[in-house]
Image 1 (tube, one colour):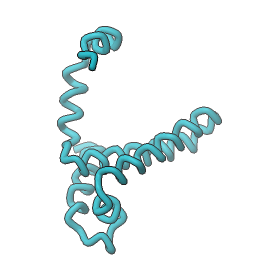
Image 2: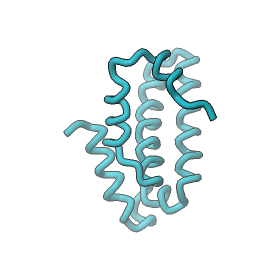
Image 3: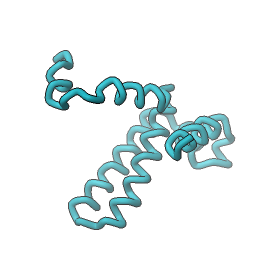
Image 4: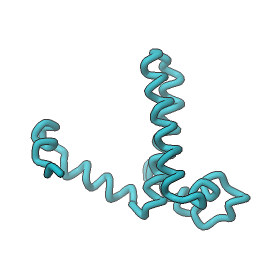
Length: 105
């Protein structure tokens, strides 16, 4: 198992924990909208570190982004394996072709 799978499993376990005993459980208890908001905050912080060309900061904030992405997925009942399957489906396809194939709404 890899680190992301391990982390996703830990987040799934913490989802059932008492919110007073776990940051993850506390965040999940606040609902999907709060989880999405926190993910967005962390993404912005990673962008700031990238723009500042702060390598260590970017690494740290990127770890936060991945964690909060997994929490957000958990909040909506989306498994990491589903996201990985979508990436696998896209593998070998040009990014331009894949984007053009999406239906416009």
